[in-house]
Every structure is written in structure tokens, then in C-alpha cells.
Length: 631
Image (tube, rainbow, N blue to C red; front, side):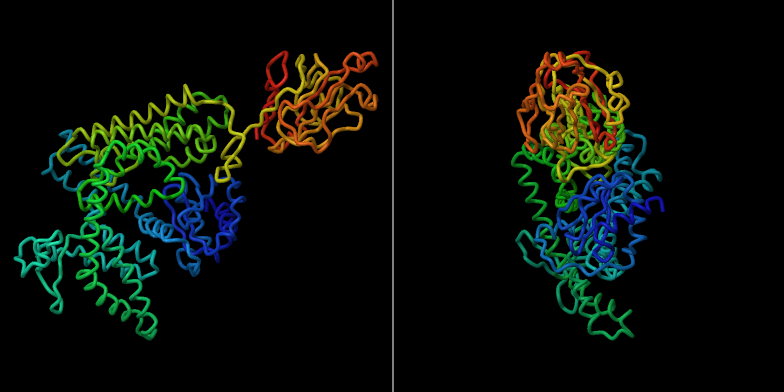
């Protein structure tokens, strides 16, 4: 197990395997359903090497890992035994919306990888057809099209599996329900047969009846690629199965439970659930299209600008069933098209940071973030780079909004649920070939990428990493922070090694620099607390708000003056701001007494940090940057 140690620490800090109700994963996250989230050590997990951050959203406890999440998931599942057994779910009410998000992500996440893969194959097949590299009658096209279409055509079977797993039902029961919905004979009956009679004639839900079950009319629908009917049917089937498990003796439960369950749920699905769910899906598709058509540009701007916010909180899952339903009902989807530029905007911003920063650690983080962002995986960029710095994240949202508005203006639509990033481009090729919508997608993502890059490169870049790290941001090795220590004195800069005091010059007391003062004033170099003020007044200790301990020692052996010629302006324990006057001293009197005034400014706990970088200036003024502490 490559990630055995990490997996064990994750399990321990989510409250142990007995606190885990279920576990799934998506492209970058482990998605736990915990019985009691208060038992999880969130702060510890956020600080662990190998974990980007932790998000509690949608009733899920999401541990963001990065691109290697499948390997971590495998080790966590193996060690915790989560695939073979799960704890009983909590009775805690998490709210209808959170429950909806939890169900949707639980149902779609396991199939997401294969869904994207088959979508990519179908998209590239459409691309080859549009470019004339293949013909629709060639065997190569037929096979590639079958590979690309197989999962989506038989989607009810796959969702029957994942839904049954989510609803704690027999997974093969869910697959059987899905297989019945797409049973080929039903399609042939509606294609070649004559209806016996018509229900709801003249209404929007007019339905011809081709067969009956025990005299009850069955409204046959096309359930290929459908989503809502199988999820609802499996949910009801899970409830029916649970009842039969309680009343059927264990000796015959193995076959009688599925026997009785299928005899009830399949007719119920075909007669009631399927038609009602299909009509609901048609109304949902028409409704989303109506709202979108009110102003495609505004819809594109809003979706593009806020998509990354939705991703942070896991709320983007709420759009997945809508998009798939649109593809089923309308044969296209304009909703997810509007967010296509978001990952490119994020990537453009990070590329600008990569080219501008001189921070080696930040540069090393930016390289893989750009690469994964090109392929549509932006969590490493969001949590590792842009979100903790706030402004880059906002700029990426602005660029994504502009791209979304262009995509809406051009009437871009997605025709398959395909790959992410650049692999998603073929998804916007119409069955009739490349149209204005396809070129709108190309323009939209290009504008998002370029605008994100330009906004960051020329208008938003600061090569000083954020000091205030948000509570849901990454820590440890995932994010490099720095504390800037201003100069407390005005004068000439002296290397610490040149100070005529071995305790300082050898670095024994910590890393830093020294100043030969030009004025007898000492100002606070940071925001923090005055933790020590020697009675002699010659030395001051400050702990910054971020825990950096700074010692300012005026002169050599000046402790012997016993406070003479030193006038403190603060007292120990005071809270100080950068630039506050801390002390004044009489330079002429101290020198006349035979003392050197060279003043070391050191980080006394420098061993706790990556490095302490000194200024390259020869002379320095008050409040100018003197030291940079790499945290």
C-alpha cells in the first residue's frame, strides 16, 4: 500500500472506521459520510502532508487529496473495510438540500470516471466524423460510437447499481430494475405496434397504451439514457426490499426477497414511477431551457462566475442530474456549457503566478496545478494557490464569467457529457457538425484563459504570499506562507556574521541581520504582542500574530547601563502594531560611555521555519522590509 500511513491517519482522524457510514471518491476528494462529524479532527487533517484541505458540505465530510485520490481511496477502503461493511447512518437531520446533494453525489460519483471516458470517445468520434476522417458507415466509426454510447444508452443499469449501493439495497436488484426499463422488446413494441388506446388525449401528457399488466394500462416510455426514473424506482425498491427482509424467514430470504421485490417494483416502475418521473424530467428540461432562454448571456455569466464557488462547497452536483436530464429530453444541454471556461480561467491565473513568482515553493506548486487544470481538474489550483490568496480566485471567477457570457451569446450547447478541460471540447460538436455554438465554446474558453492570465499577470499579482490563511484552506507543505519583518530602525545594514558578539554572529540565537542605527528610535517591525522588555531597556522581544519571535538587541553589552539612556514607550504584554514606537535611546550618550550600537534583529525561533531571508539593501529606513520569514 503506497499510501498506507496516510490512509491510517485519515481513518483515525475522521473518528475511526466505526464513525464512517459510507465512503466514495470523485476526481480529487474522499467523500465521507460520518455518523458524528464532531468526532473528526479537522484541524489535524488540514495540516497533514498529502491532504490539501477538508470541506464539510452537503452532508459530506470531504477530504481533498488531489490527482492521486483513487490510490488513497483504495488504501483507505482496504484498511477500513468500508467496501464490505459500513456503520449505521446517523439519525441526525442534515436538511433536504444537503440530503439531495449527498444522494446525487453518491449515485453519480462512482460512474463519473467511466462516464467522462466514454463521453470523450464519443466526442472524438464526432470530431473525426466532422473532419472527414471517418464516415458514418465505416466499421471503425460504428465500433467507436458503440464504445462511446454504451454507458449513456444503458445508463439506467449503471445507475441502478450505484443507486442500490447508495440506498443500501441489493445492487443486482437495482441493475435488474434498470435492465427492465431498457428492455429492447418494449422499444420494438412502440416502434412497430399499434396502440390499444390513448390516455390523456389532447393534453401535454397524451400517452398511447400498447399493453396492459393485469388489466392496468402500461405507458411505455423510452428510458434509455434516463436518470430520474431509475433513481426513484431503486429508492422505492430499496424500501420494499427492506420490508420483505423483515418478514421472510432467513432460510429462504436469499431468493424470495428479490423475487417478491421485483414482482412489485418493476410493474410499479413501468406503470407509475417511470411515466411520472419522465413527465417530471420533461418539465424540468423545459423549465431550465425557459429560464436559460430569458437571457443566455446573463445565465452564462452567472454560471461561469460562480461555478468554482459551487465546486468548493460541492454544490455543483446539483447541476449534474439537470444536465443529464436535458441531454435525455432535449438531446442537448446549455447549462454546463456556460461553465466550460471556469477551469481555463483558473489555469490562466495560475500560469501567470507561475511566470511571475520568485518563490520557489510556490512555483513548484503551480506547475502541476497548471497541468491538471488544462485537463479540467482545478482543485489543486483552487485550494493550493488561488483561494488562500483570495484575489487570484476572484480574478479567475471574473474571467470565467466573461467566458460564460460569450458562450451564452453564441448559443453553445453540450451534446454529450464528455471529458474535462481540453478533452471536453468535442462535447460541443453538434450532430450536424461544427456550428456557431462549437466555435463559441472555443472562443469562450480562450477568452477565459487569456483574460485570467492577463488580469493576474498585470493587475493582480503580488509576490508576497497571503498572511491570513482561511480556516478551510490548505496548510503545511501544501501552502507556503511568509511573514515580512519591517525594519525597526533607520541606518546601515550589517551582516549578522559581522556583529562583534559571538552569540549573534554564529547564529546561535537565531537567524537575522543587524543595523547600525542612524537615529535613536525603535519601532515595531510586526503586528503582535510585546512578550519581553528587559528591565535594562536595551532589548525587546515581540511575538507576531503569526507566531514569529523577534528579538531586537540595541548595542553590545548595553545591559551594563542598567536602563540608563533608554526610554521605553511601551510595557511588557502590550499589543502593538507595525510602526508603533517602542523605545527611544540616546545614541551620543551610549557611545560616549564606550558602547557599540550595532543592533541585531533576529528571529529567535527561526528553527521552526523553512528559512529567514535578509534584505539585500545596504541602508534601510523605518518600515522597509528587513527580513522575510518563510513559514
